[in-house]
Length: 65
View (tube, rainbow, N blue to C red):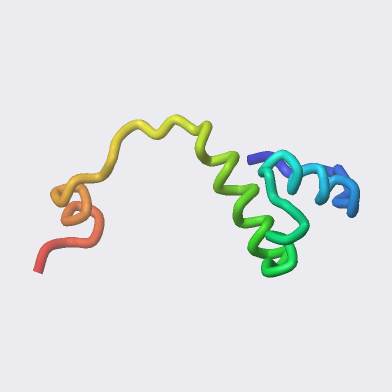
């Protein structure tokens, strides 16, 4: 992921909240960090991952005891 120089503003934050369908009532119970996590997860939904790791992949990475 490349860094961005776009300044994070209140207007941009509210735009992202609207894109996620978050209402004022929903935002009342959330922190900015929670909203940013939702934005990140929303963007991750469009990513293509090659495959899901199997138990053998986990053993190969961490070792088997």
